[in-house]
Amino acid sequence: MDRLDEIRAFAAVADARSFTQGARKLGVSGAQVSKLVARLENRLGARLLNRTTRDVSLTDTGQAYLERARDLLEGFDALESSVKDQSGPSGLLKVSAPVSFGKGQLTPALLAFANGCPSVSLDVSFTDRMVNLVEEGFDVAVRIGHLSDSSLVARRLAAVRMVTCAAPDYLARHGTPGALEDLGRHEAILDTNAKDAAVWRFGPQGDARDVRVHGRLRFNGAEACVAAAVAGFGITRTPAFAAADELRSGRLTPILCNFEPELIHVHAVYPHARHLAAKVRAFVDFLVERYAGEPEWHQGWGSRHAAGR
Image (cartoon, rainbow, N blue to C red; front, side):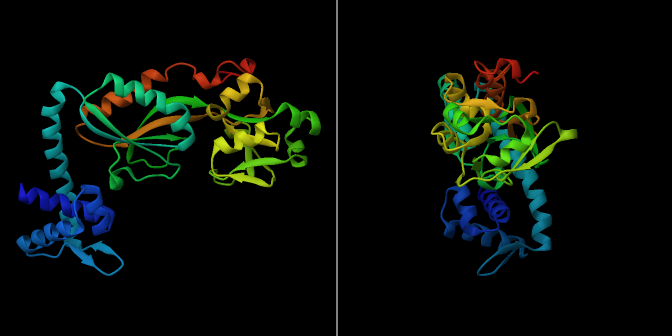
């Protein structure tokens, strides 16, 4: 077991490129990780890591050793999980999700899952930062929009409309845009989580149009943008789940619905593994079932422009 601890410490440091971050991932002290890695190198008679005051990098020998070490660790973890999983999902499940979706939509699902799987502990991080699942030790992430990391397994959960909307009193004062060109005469409320907050894309993929907008209010989150729109500061564009209550109540009015961009999607993503832990499989299957059918955030408003149009 000492040898396995050495290999696990080395892999954690190599993945994180840091003794401090590797130790944090394992939940031990930096001194302990350093001791384990040094013991491994001494036993092998080879240097696996290059250390500087600013960085940690793999030697050629270390790179080759890491590839085999990952296979060994994955096999050992799978062996242990196969025994534990016989009694059902259990253990700590670490989840990452975007802030607005996590707080507004995912929290009730998490509580329902926790209620149904009392042997699973949840450690949930709501952040709009794109976490590295492997290096940061997350089991599952919920992500919205285009997926770029092909090294992850993705399960589609639900569709999301991007809705352009404003408060009725704002539209009464400034007029309702009937064409995309009209947006240039309006105050936009910008979500800086977007790649380019000042460019809104409309229409289907093959016939998309980019419209540059301007506004004095910028927020790095949909919730604040929706609140500003309800207060009459201008027009915003937001995922439907962030504004569903306001749209249903009439506090916000959807506009330019015929120009909406293609749907984006919510996915559950997790690292490839030859043996998927029961806790991960149970959680992802639960989310797939919970979000099956037309999403709740598309219901009760603008039915003629529903996601299935």
